[in-house]
Image (cartoon, rainbow, N blue to C red):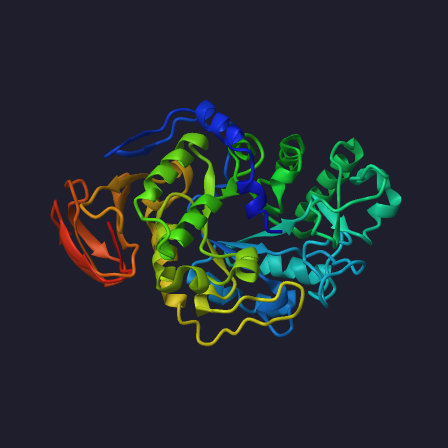
Length: 461
């Protein structure tokens, strides 16, 4: 579900109170300093320098099955993918269905597998093969609502939201294909927690991406996740963007604010220097070890708001570099490695055109750097982000990340025009490898460079 607008319509006074209560941001040439302590989240060790890949099973292959997708695992492993996020694997409701195949997020049965994708054994085989290759698998979980023909709606109608006349209603008016659940019911909380645990035990999955997680009471997640983690140390991703999600339950949240600002910079509506204030605000609000998901697209954005090329134009790769090198965990969506430039249908079959994977090498280089240079690890495992000031901050964004003698220095031209720039200071000076030019380079302080439109440079040691 696309909750971007819902989140960004939260009352401004609430956002202001959260920011004030979270602490004061400190910004200087030393970078963003986290002021808010982490509360109890222990991340899986395998997640700290991981790359996440979202899998749209329906559209991935002509067959649209777990078995067909499993053949792609060696290719994705070679590209550097660590975590596979499978979009919902459950059966889809028929009643009030949208389109010919319906929404993946209209769940008919929480304990079954969509027969269009294969069998439960096919899913278990896919997870096993991923594990054998050293990858992990999380599944999309839709706890906020069900399909209208889910058995729960007849067996437990009191578990649902009702209007003043007693009629069961959708959670949002235009989500007419689903019925909203009411988490005031203890029995529903117990059922949903046990359903989550079922898939960990049954299919050995490694975690969950939780759809519209903030539309449920945070108390549900804070109660359910420790019980899940008593079975296995899972990774939890919330489709939400508020700090309290990290207190007990979630390893990672969406960073829609950064996503929207990237779009606005690419479209000439805003300038690169605004990244500073946005990231400093983020730093003050979120715990020091909170993982933030960085992305230029995903299933919602692709289907409803256009491809990364529609929104970011010739800057698509430049912003991908930013997503991989700034603090957080980068996401690759199905088809990005092929520069796929079409919005996929959401409720119908619409196969991705793969071609010869023209951007596989690009992502492989970024994935490799993410793993091998600990400065790029997520959360407190990685290096802080030190902004490098320039005489052209409205167009050029430069920063340094450093951890235990590992450095990554990034210079981005976030504009469609050639830019000349002088970088201030000398904390980035030294000998580096150039990621995309495969050469060694020495950089002096007060560096003067000329950069082509949307040019990106990544130096590391």
